[in-house]
Length: 198
Image 1: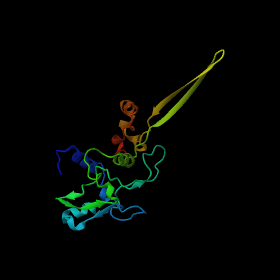
Image 2: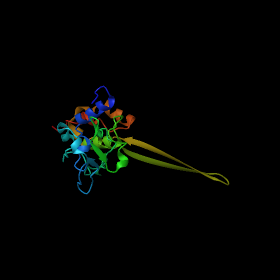
Image 3: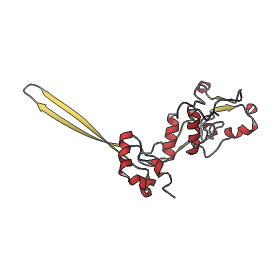
Image 4: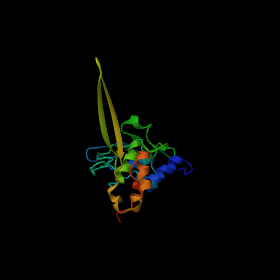
């Protein structure tokens, strides 16, 4: 672990945001609800104090039910070999697992950036909502002596849907934050709403 490396810092921030190591998913090393296993673990190569990072945890994210309009994700979340939360297959110079399928070995343990799956997991876990687009189409037809010209223009208006827990959070009523949302193509300030329920 090198805390001077941005990727490791991002990994630890993932833990701070509630994410578990990807290999802790209940479908990582065994079949779980008809999914998995995705890893073959070499238990004999893992030091005793590290075995816990491969123990299945039923609380690990494997997807969610539909939370309503704009839900970031619903259903089973595929095992994320590219997750920044997945540890390396090498520990103290020993190989501690292989991926199933073996072709995914090159993807695991990366510390470059959060994967698309990591981002969807966070959006879903914090109940962030997708933006809803409203499309207005206008068609103008001009007819001249021997030809007809049709021009169609489409205007898309972005609208931001707040996390439903935001209702009691003063940040969510701040116009400067609501104005920030459409410009940056992200949900309303959901991180500020995290503790609004209690």
